[in-house]
Length: 156
Ligand SMILES: [Zn+2]
Image (cartoon, rainbow, N blue to C red; front, side, top):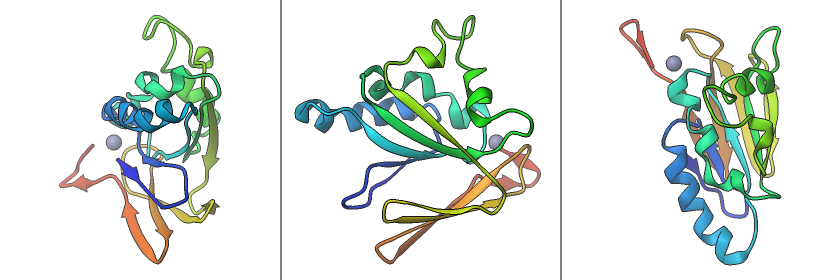
């Protein structure tokens, strides 16, 4: 999912399997302009359906691409270490550190509030299985709340 704010880099919401198609969409104007991606992503939690697109994100094949990823802290391990453990042999042909583009991780606490350019973001803990955040995203007097669902004890 993508939040577009005029004058701001793309803000990606979670990095599931739809990330591959989103990457191709984002790459069209970038390739035409000869520029690498500069973008940001908010991760609610690290269940596979929310992160599995990460190694298949086409803009990360470009040297100079930079994606800042904000997600829930993972106890004793950093978000970067935890994500890197998913992208390595034998699960994937290369390590995440071998991508030409750079992934820059930011560990979030349970009530962090921060800005990305002109976008104000509040993170809050959401009832789910494992460390999970929901986000309030505000820009240009528009507010979007984004959080994983939890229905009748079933979660995704
Ligand atoms: Zn989940």
